[in-house]
Structures are given as structure tokens and as C-alpha cells.
Amino acid sequence: MTEKEKAAAGYLYNANYDEELLNEIGRCNDLCHRFNQIAPSNRQAQSEILKQIFGSMGEQVTVNTPFWCDYGYNTSVGNYFFANHNCQILDGGKVRFGNHVFIAPNCLFTTAEHALDAEQRNEGLEVALPITVGNNVWFGAGVIVLGGVTIGDNAVIGAGSVVTKDIPSNVIALGVPCRVVREITEEDKKRYQIYLEK
Image 1 (cartoon, rainbow, N blue to C red):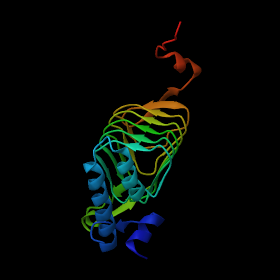
Image 2 (image 1 turned 90 degrees about the vertical axis):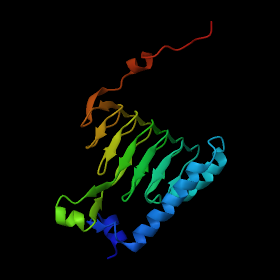
Image 3 (image 1 turned 30 degrees about the horizontal axis):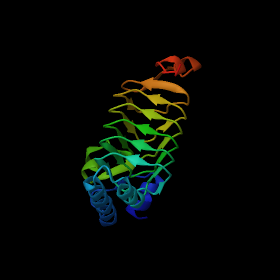
Image 4 (image 1 turned 180 degrees about the vertical axis):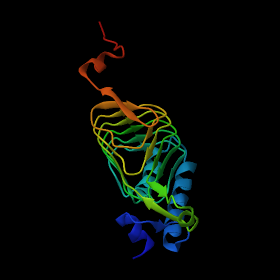
């Protein structure tokens, strides 16, 4: 079994010294570098690079620079995806984003988890645990999402949170570690003023 196959199957694998994986990371890093050099106003050119980075990509995808990703092909984004400045996706495992996902600046999604045993860790062994994000999810600034986590539809993750466990649908969750604070209700439509023409 190759190191890439071990990673996909959820086993410890060697990401640091395996030539195939290093080449794939190098390819994606080069694409990210090219993406980050494009003028922010040139969304069409950015989109063409993103199509080469992501495994699959929906319509109306916007990513602000800088953006970094490890492999790219393990990440899929749905329609109307928005990631603000300094989004990082460490996608040794699968990372799936649904439709209408909004990501504030400085967010990190990491599937990588290194071996706890020092000897294994020094050998370069790690494991890649998937991340799944539903539809209509909003991540506040500076959120970190760890591997093995599923976040349900319509969830709001508060700024600065570290998500270590699954978050259900239709809730506001925040903190370190991230925990559910309350459900989202109809009353939340009244939280901010709406200007109405007279």
C-alpha cells in the first residue's frame, strides 16, 4: 500500500518523506503561489487557477488572497463559496464544503494530525481525518477546524473558535473548544436593522 493509499484509508502515513506526496504538495503550492500573484480584480484568472487546485468546484466561488492548500484535489467546494483573506486548507484528508459557505479571514481547516508517539512523529508519520461542512455555514474570523469534524447545515461558528467535535445543524457554536451556545431561531432575523423604503 502506498503512503497516499494509507492516507485515504485513515492509517498513519508518511507525508514528509514520500516522493509522490511531496510532488503533489509542491504542485499545489505552486498553483497557490500563482493564484496569490493574480490581481484581486481579475476574478476570472483566479477562478481558472482554483479549478486546477480544487478537486471539484461549484459556481460563484470567490477566494481572497492569500490562500494556501496542501493537495487541493482532496478539497471540494459547493456553489456560492466565499473564503476571505488568509484561508488555509491542509487537506491530506477529504475536505468538503457545501453550498453558501462563508469563511471570514484567518481561518484554518486542517485534516492533519501527527502521531502522539515521539518516535512515530519523528519518522514523519501522521493521519488525515476528513472535514465535512454542510450548506449555509458561516465561520467567523480566526476559526480553526480540526480533522474528523462534521458541521451541520445553517451553523454559525463564532470568531476565534477551535472546532474539535461535530457541530449540529441550525446552531450558533463558539469557544475553545467550540461548543453549542443555542439554536438559531426566527428571532435572529430581527438581530440587525433592515432599511425599508417608505
